[in-house]
Length: 147
Image (cartoon, rainbow, N blue to C red; front, top):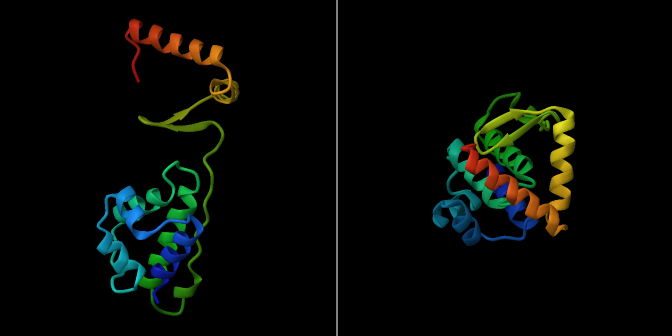
């Protein structure tokens, strides 16, 4: 078995999914995923790696680890020579003052981060906070402020 197929098999077991669910979630062909899983094909593009990692982690949690594992499997297969077994990937979280939004990375102050975390923790548990956030969004839209 190839390194990539071992990694895909491990992620399938970890996330309790199957090839067909991965194909649906990633938009990739199930025959292609099966070929990677069964070691018949080991050629995978960077975009396919990202799509496959996102399919394992649709809510975003664990995406970086899944992507790193898939990349490690791919590189372990592609690299040859005496240093091939020395491949090591390390994931590093973004600093606290950077958040990633739909329009890119944004630098925020620690105070703003605490405020956003406070709202995030309350919005689903407190209807009043949810209504206040909706009112703020409507006000922004009326003022012409958009995402």
